[in-house]
Amino acid sequence: MESSEAHESTPAQKPTSSSVRSSPDVHVLSVRDKTIVLVGTIHISQESADLVRDVIEEEQPDGVCVELDTRRFEALSQQHKWESLDLKEIIRKKQLSTLLVNLLLASYQKRLGDQLGVLPGTEMLEAITVSKKHDIPIFLCDRDIRVTMRRAWRSTPFLKKTMLVSSLMLSVFDTEPVTEESLQNLKKQDVLSEMMKELGAEVPTLKKVLIDERDQYLAEKILQADGKKLVAVVGAGHVEGMTSVLHQAQRTDLQALDVIPPVSPIWKWVGWSIPAIIVGSIALIGYQKGAAAAGENALFWILANGIPSAIGAILAFAHPLTILVAFAGAPFTSLTPVIGVGYVTAFVQAYMQPPMVREFQSVAEDIAIPRRWWQSRLLRIFLAFLLPTIGSVIGTWVGGTRIVSNLF
Image 1: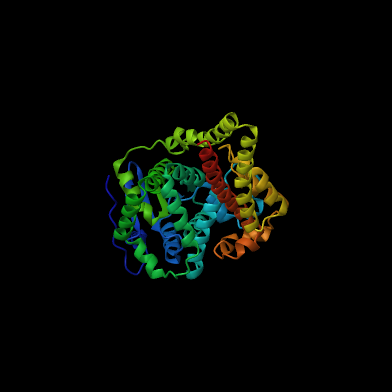
Image 2: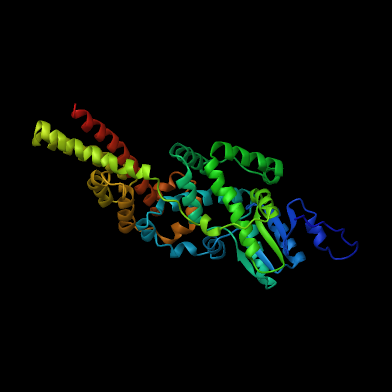
């Protein structure tokens, strides 16, 4: 397969497709019986949005493929999407941490967009708007964001997870301005290649899930889209990988890329071994030293878990009932890997002090301002999830160490 050649534009006439095809961000590929006009964009660049509009209007393709899944499409096209969010259901399904990461990413991107006067995803919205204007079918070609996030999380080693979460938190509170010029530098192929190489070197599994797998997924979905001539709007970081995949002419098994890998049996063993050791140690202490000694160790376990977890809830300015649940629940949730105390306290907090609609609408801005984590009922739910969890983890190690040492 070879890339289509650009053609000279005709002077003194309306610009033809050659005017947009000559852009370094536009790549025209001939794949089987399709012509694919691949547009590499920056998600917070007005120039990218303008280029997308020009490409679609001048090419008049049979279809427009966008780097969106159903959820992100709805997030962009429905201004009041947050109002219908069922937070309690998210907590029940233990997806609160995934939602938090998505909000952090959205906040970071929105902050960059605010600095440049461009909303995140403007070029995708432009693609959708122009396509509808010309009655051109729209194809959502990206993998479900929830699948991508879970595959990325499951495949990332524990220490790398800590590093990534810390980096993400720091980037949200970073106030260094970003210019359009710096964004243009990011679009340069050599800079992007270096970034991908660095990500691959630091966290190979993460790059595989976030970049390589999605390159394959996007390419296959584009090939499955109806039409002989397609415009595909994707982030600039995917252009090189997608071009390589399309040139190889190999079909991708999308079902395999949609599977969420199960938790490693090792982690399941570790998860159940800790409570087994604690309970077994208390039982053995009772056998060796009597019921009173066993009772003292059991009480120490309750206090070692309950107090730090309750302190975490207090630091979150949680509802009094949430604080009580943190104290009472942590000693028991610490003895099972099925559910952590944070999900219990978050659910109680959401029930006792439900967030207001306007807080959902402003969360992307509020999340970047530290004091608003305590002022917003919505963000306080995340604090009621995170801080009691941290307290319970501390209590588990303190209590567990003390109880096991008492055996000797």
